[in-house]
Image (cartoon, rainbow, N blue to C red; front, side, top):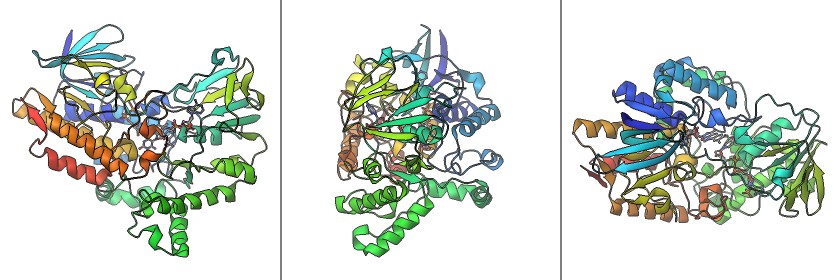
Amino acid sequence: MSQHDVIIIGAGFSGMYQLYTLRDQLGFDALVIEAGDDVGGTWYWNRYPGARVDIQSIEYSYSFSEELQQEWDWTERYSAQPEIRAYAEHVADRFDLRRDILFGTRVTALDWDESATEWTVTTADGQTRTARFVIAATGCLSVPSRPRFAGMDDFEGDLYWTSEYPQGTDLSGKRVAVIGTGSSGLQVITAVAPEVADLTVFQRTPSYAIPAHNEPADARLAAVRPDYESFREASRASLLGFQCVEGAIPVLELTEDAARVELDSAWAEGGLCLNTRFPDAGTDPAANAVVAEYARGQIRAKVTDPVVAEKLSPRTYPIGSKRMCVDTGYYETYNRPNVHLVDLRETPIERFTPTGIATMSGDYAFDVIIMATGFDAMTGALNAIDIRAGGQRLADKWAHGPRTYLGLMSHGFPNLFTVTGPQSPSVLSNMMTSIEFHVEWIADTLKYLRENDIQRIEPDLDAEDNWVRTNNDLANLTLMPQAASWYMGANIPGKEQVFLPFVGGVGLYRQVVQGMTLNHHGFELA
Ligand code: FAD
Ligand code: N01
């Protein structure tokens, strides 16, 4: 049985940087265990046509190495998956990470041994390893949600999941269905529509999509490169971990014309910054309604058929309370003669058939069905591992929602850290900013423990209860819990519905964590 100081689970951007900090900067014996066959996590798995970032690449990238950010050239403002995967591979090469990553190996269980003060880590091949510390860099969107439809196995065409999309497929001339209209669905729909013979989109809930205005990255890169560090520092202090105009005047205090000017400007800038223009958009239903109606007006302006435009217009949840999408011609896709929209609220899917999909209003024939149905977010990957300590399972402790201190650790599970865990800003932010903060906090903590000959760290129950309450109270002050979203766990049947990420923003969260942990407040060290 091999022994390590630290085992890191996952070789996405979190696990890769965590390995670098612990091994190269601090000299720990660290091993990464990764289920996939290479680095990149999200960008290794999600290879569907059209996959790309919704946060500009000059922001959605590592900031920890000045040389790295100076030498890497992004080609587009919003890069596509192959380029981001190539970036992850470049980082792995540059810092020689792969030699300490065990690929093609899934962690199935973690058992805490109190007397030895170490975790036993079991993998799917039956092997065990021990480590004093375990870091779950397992990803917030790494466990696909796979809804089952009656007759699914009878379908004789090809069935693809966006998160496991087969490479080298040719959809030209094919009759294709897409189920799901979140970010993955919107991207795949926009990308495949021009090449397929016929595309039918099955939509349960429409998304709001803001244009990306994608373009070559050169000018933006040239502007930030002379002082990348100041640019990053501003992002770290921001609400979302990337730079948006954070408006100070409530939309309800503006005249209609002034509000329109502000909204036009946000729309022209593109990307996920629409709501941040107004401090009341996320908390006041009337303010939110102004922004939502503006966005619906944009849909009406783009979609020729008013009936289709209305079906594409969200009306059942506040704008921003489900993840907004960033699009490159999504709505215009519905003006193509080969694209059709089926509203599942009107005509639900009855079953899959050998030739396609049967709905209440008729049968559709397809060669390919693409499932873009999302993920068991934030807790899915952690609960998939049988994590036990002191006779307790983490999945049981979290049955009624995750319980963490600062989104970093959970009481009763010593020496186990989560990168971008639940109750941290995580998926509500530029994940790169949030990943770097957590990775560096964990590295600093392990360094401190080693320097002070401390073997064990565990958050206090009181501190954890306070943090859980703070998260829930803050979320309930906003409109966020009003949607049946994956932020709430509402997309997974039987999952407790509780708002999963910290809603107070990246800058505030960093201040709180830095303040709380200066003297290790809320932690028991032994
Ligand atoms: P991941 O990249 O998910 O990596 C986790 C790794 O852990 C995976 O490789 C997985 O195989 C491995 N793993 C999990 N469990 C186990 C186990 N038990 N044993 C072994 N290995 C395990 N965020 C943004 O901020 N901006 C974006 O534009 C953006 N775009 C996205 C696009 C898509 C299609 C998706 C799905 C997500 C996107 N995200 C985006 C969120 C994205 O997940 C994060 O930005 C980031 O890539 C997460 O990195 P990570 O290393 O924490 O997790
Ligand atoms: O998943 P989703 P996603 N029958 O959960 C529908 C990031 N990301 O993979 O809304 C019919 O958003 C479901 O309907 P409803 C980003 O953070 C980023 O698209 O539940 N439909 C919904 O329409 C994103 O938010 C990018 O009613 C069913 C869709 O499937 C997150 O990952 C790209 C159904 C799922 O949408 C997840 O996005 C991709 C059923 N049984 C992902 N079950 C970027 O652009 C589910 N649906 C950077």
